[in-house]
Figure 1 (cartoon, rainbow, N blue to C red):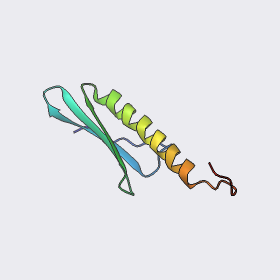
Figure 2: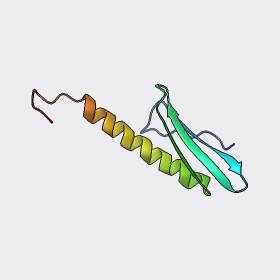
Figure 3: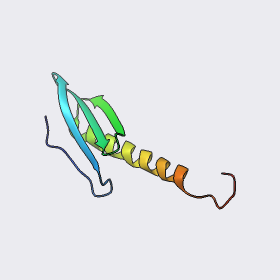
Figure 4: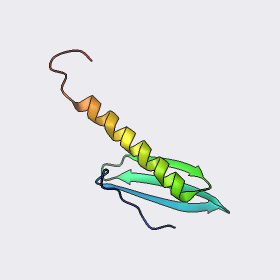
Length: 74
């Protein structure tokens, strides 16, 4: 198992990668609310970066759905 990663732009998220087969890794990220992202491949650092980007996209989508629309339909 690699050392857990955290990123300042994603507070409350933690990212990690495990070798699940010879040269094959599963990277995952999870936050304190139970949301998670996961990818599989051969480069654990690149996989953690993909998880980080997916988490950012997820959080951006979550913010859009909770922002007030000022009474207007989206």
